[in-house]
Image (cartoon, rainbow, N blue to C red; front, side):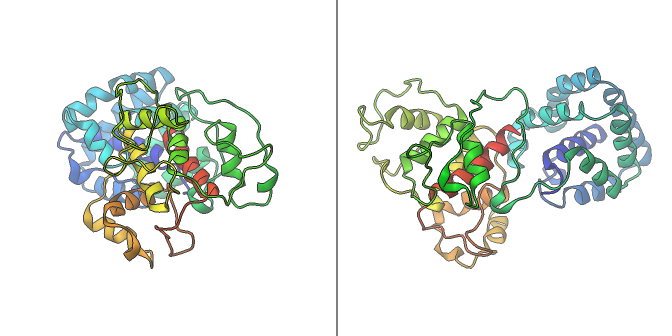
Length: 354
């Protein structure tokens, strides 16, 4: 990925918010590789005096950690004033949330005061390359890796507490997904199948994958629904409380009166569930029909994607939650392996908590 997109989005989005009260969806920033270019293209059309005034306002906040705290506290009011009372819905369409932006403001506390002010100076001068270089300085370089993952980093504060258990599996030592498997296993989100074994190429059932998502999202079984609508999920089943928690949150919907808990989950079903999970915590992204077609056009087997899954798969690809099994093969109907499931869960974990 190169740069931390959410940090760039936070800095430039806040910058634009201070410039104009007419900010609307047409000027909203999308989280893609052209984010900086897009933002600076819009900044070209701003009045120099307005830009200087906005920089001056931000400098007040950027000079100290307390200033950044004040900026966080004022962010909801700024959003409501500029975007309207439904600003959270608008942000979610672009994969952003108020919590995400506040978290990124916290990241700025790790910067030196000089570099925070330098960032504003570079923005005012429309120095794109300077902005990229400065952000990269604090990001620590490229963190991209096959499968949409990367080198695990410590989660930010204020996230659910996961156990820190060192777990190693003897059957994944040379596996491509080892990093993702062991990291997620150390959080207690995914488990081995036997002592010291993970069985990365075994398949995953719908109940098993749902359980992973419930653990990751920390969903609670609040018994809101006494009787689930699924005839194949019974109180004595090990996954009953898990499915009920997923159903109450809107994660599990099933097909008619069946959940098919013991059926092997397909890659497209996995993509739909993980996208739905991202949406529950306001980490999803908006895609229209044109963008759906554009994203899916990269895959030779796109015609094999079920109509009901196309939008969610496009969102999953856009967010980096899922990748193809090859350069241009998505394999939507294939059943997912435990290694693939662990990688998708890892990607979602990073999206939500880092």
